[in-house]
Image (tube, rainbow, N blue to C red; front, side):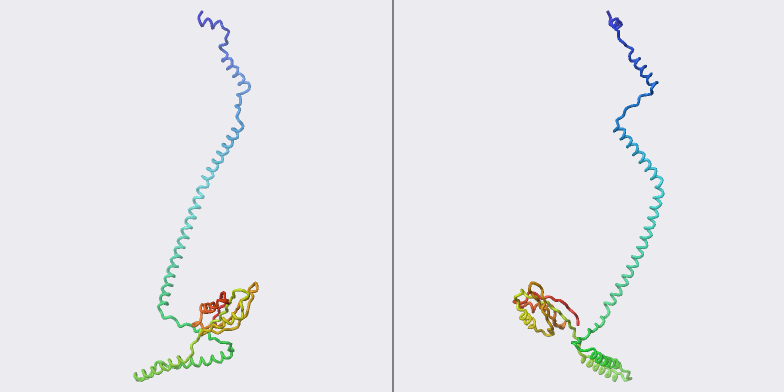
Length: 271
């Protein structure tokens, strides 16, 4: 028996796939095509992607619409900045020219002879204002006398004019030499600190006042409580600026090492 004959005798349904296909088509025609099942998580991701794409498209469309306006605004701002930059350059050039002129004027003033310094106010030393007012007319009279001196005579004879000129110059120099020179003075308030509360402050003040220098005049003093029973000596003095300075006073006072710990300048005033 051949194979074909054997298969012909077997009860096998060779056409089942055709019937299955026909059945599927029938149900699709009746109920419509079956909806594919999708995972919920995948569906939400796809929705997010779709929304993102939509937002990107809207942004691109908006930027395309506003691009022309932004470009015009940018161009106008650049032009305004250029104008401002030009004005700033002009201001800088003007300042440079003014600075050059100022430097030239300063150079000219430095080359010219220095003006005579203004004399300081005289030290009154307790004198009343009436005495100053009385001395003021005397000084004015002396200045008037100086103005009356004619340094250049108008004599027709040259030799006589020269002799008169020398005589008047000599008189003028002698008169100026007789005027007393002004002495610059200062009032200094010193704080002299002892080592501890056992230091003899009377002896400390005696040591301080023992410092005697030309141009130095000691004044009033008092003891001031610092703390923990320690007191410092505060003493006033008047000095001539050309002869006595604060460094000299500190050096001389600190030589009394047994009593003085340090010296500070509490106040310094020109008289």
